[in-house]
Every structure is written in structure tokens, then in C-alpha cells.
Image (cartoon, rainbow, N blue to C red; front, side):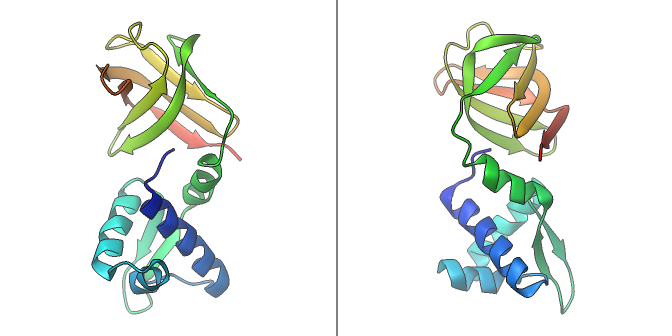
Length: 158
């Protein structure tokens, strides 16, 4: 799962601060650590919340917590082995380069290799040691070598 550098930095800081303090982390604490405006960090935290990488707690003692998925995402972003892509339950010739989840139930998969065999409605599975995503192709962008897919199942393995 590929996050922007700023999003990944926010998650790393959130994980570190949460481990150190054992409490919810306020967005201004994160903003101070990464030298960004609190408004920018708040907006990015809301985006990360929508894709279930952080959860928020309202109130005077509120803030943000990283989810288990956030911890795993940081590990996955370090994965260097090629991630295979399966087309209709058969290994295809393409490999995953980047994955962006689009709430509520879709994703964009940027891949390397020829995507001309992928058609709307085809089953797509992405599986690695740490990641499993299953869905159906709902679109294709040949210019960016990307597949748009519904997401039926997605989880990071331990």
C-alpha cells in the first residue's frame, strides 16, 4: 500500500508518540513533529481515518490512535519482493507497484506489465506474504498502467 511521504510520516509519528505516551495523540503534536500546519495534518488524519489507518477519539482527552492496519501498512511499504497479481484465479504477468484504497470499497492498483488482458468484471487477486486483496476489475487506465477494482476482501497478514 503506497502512501504519500507526508501520510507515511504522519503514521510513523503517530505510532511513535502513541507508543511513548500510551494515549491518543493530538494533531498539533504530530504537526509539530513533522513541521506542518495543524490544519494540514488534521485533514490528512481524516483521510487516513477514512481508509481505516487511524481512529479518532473525541473530547478533551481525545486525539488519534494508529490502527493495527497502520502498523502493518508501514511494514508493507517496506516490502521489496514483487507482489503477484492474479487474473481470474491465474497468475498474470503483471506485478503490483502501488495500491491506493478509495473508500468505501474500491482501489487503484498501479502495476508493471501488460494490462490488456484485464477486462471489466474479471476477478483480481493480489497476494503477498503480508497482503491479500480480492475484487473485480471495474476499470483500466492504460496510460498510467493502473487497474480500478472493487474491493471485496482486503487485509494485511501478520
